[in-house]
Length: 304
Image (cartoon, rainbow, N blue to C red):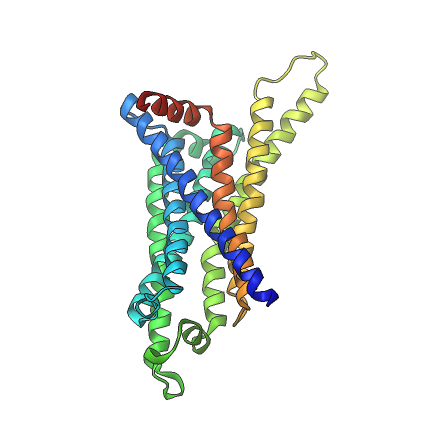
């Protein structure tokens, strides 16, 4: 009885979190579209934010729709092997794009804000505006390749027809159990580690740059404030939160695939942890980005 009550609590929490995330991310996309229509140009940071917000909104929307369909009479459609693989492919693609787009955003902030004397870093700093669109395109291609490999492995397992059991007669949970969940875990880990490690490196470089400025200020007797210090503090606070949320997203997603079977309540708790960073980070972006708030508020005022 307690498990049922807990399930009735967790499901609305998950739905509310995902729906709020969809709305928040669509606000970011809408605000950037309005800015583009007015200025006829888009900042590089806005391109990255719009790409990330679009990917996040689609990911969260997919979660809600699939879970709702699974509790309705449409379950038989979702349980179809072809539909199941398509949904699994879409899920892996959006999961990967979220990771890579977030990494591109982190790298962009790191390159624009920090100062290092390394030749590669200087070259990257001068070319970052032209490289970002290629980074985004590469992120899409890598994510697509990752999702196709993930789906291809499932199709191979189904064709092997393990234990002479018809895969068409299995439920989603059964199909996952007859597939090698350890291989799924390894594939997810291999696909997730590169963007996450790059994210950690970019965040570390930003922290290193901040400490360099603090040491210079302490050793200076002039008493003047460094003009970049406040921007560094603001960026570190933002990227520290970003780091915590991305770590939650990465660890919880990998943890979900680390076991062969989860109790339904445990599964929903993990899902809530996985999808909360997409909502919380986008909410933080809106709360700290004056341009987005100003653009969206002016549009609302013009409408009403």
